[in-house]
Length: 133
Ligand SMILES: [Mg+2]
Image (cartoon, rainbow, N blue to C red; front, top):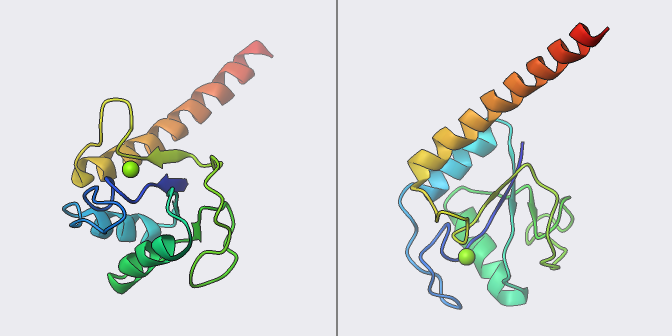
C-alpha cells in the first residue's frame, strides 16, 4: 500500500517550525510498515530547509521515506519535489484526520485491517461478477 504520512502533530508533537518530541512508536510503526512492503511517503507542508530537517530527523532514526511530498522518489536524500498538493495514496495518516489521530499501535492495527478489508472487498466483487453471469 501507499501510505502518505504527515510530520508535525503526527510523527512528532506539533511544534512547527521546531521539531517536537516523537509521538510514541511513530517511527517504529512506520519503519515496520515500510519493511512489510508499504511505500511510506512523507506528506508535509514543510518546505526547503524545514522539510530537509524533518527528513533528516526520521532518517537518523532509521526511517527512510519512499518519497517526500511526491508520489515518486526523485532526489534520493531529501526527497526532491516540494509541492504539497494532495498525493495519490491508499491511506493518509494525519493529525487532522476526522476523529483525530489514533495512537501509533492502533494505527498499525488499522493499516493491517484495511489490508484485510481490501482483500475481502476484492473477493466479494469477484463473487458478485461471477453470479451475474
Ligand atoms: Mg499535522
